[in-house]
Structures are given as structure tokens and as C-alpha cells.
Amino acid sequence: QVQLVESGGGLVQAGGSLRLSCAASGRTFRWYTMAWFRQAPGKEREFVASINWSRGTTYYADSVKGRFTISRDSAKDTQYLQMNSLKPEDTALYYCALDVYGSDKYDYWGQGTQVTVSS
Image 1: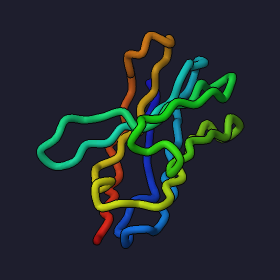
Image 2: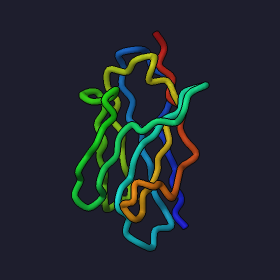
Image 3: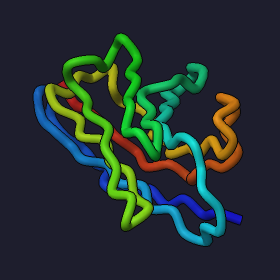
Image 4: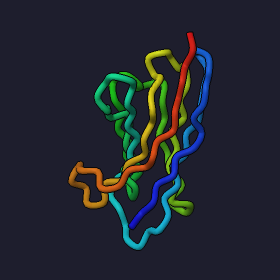
């Protein structure tokens, strides 16, 4: 089993920045991709960004391109999401997720960290 623990959420004004972290523990195998998703109240969960763990290749939702940056520290089994120029519409519960096999199906999820952007 792998446990994913997010941190770094909070309340910030529009235009501000936050940095989310997601630490994985209990790892006994290699995995393919880690990602961030978010879910706003009354909306479906949506993809935000992902990173190929070995190559470092990144992907972003159009809504966050140019504002968010995903990165990883392989030695710490931790990924990050640097969020700049935050907008009220970025308000959501942000989840860390792990795709073990590269199937685009996420096998493990964290509990989420709340990000609230005030206008």
C-alpha cells in the first residue's frame, strides 16, 4: 500500500501563490505518474497536472498552463504544485494521485488539501 499526504493548502488572495506538496510513503515499487486533481463544490473532479516520475515529463490542464508548475523530488518521493497568479475559480479541494502502471488510471489518492482564493 502507498499513502499519499498532501499539504500546503490555505487561504490566499487573488493573484497570490501557494505551493502544495504530496509525500508518498509505504512505497515498495516503482510508479509511472503522479498527478494533481481538484474538485470544486458542486463540480466534477478535474485533472490539473501530472508528471512522469522517471522522465519528468509534465502535462497541464489548459486552465492552469502558464500559472501552475508541477515538479518532483524523487529522493523524497514527493511531488509539488507551485500555483501562481491564483484566481477565485482555482478554489477547490486539491488531491494528489498515483498511476502505478501508466494506464491513466489512478490507483492511489490522498485525502486532499483545501485551496481557497478570495477575490
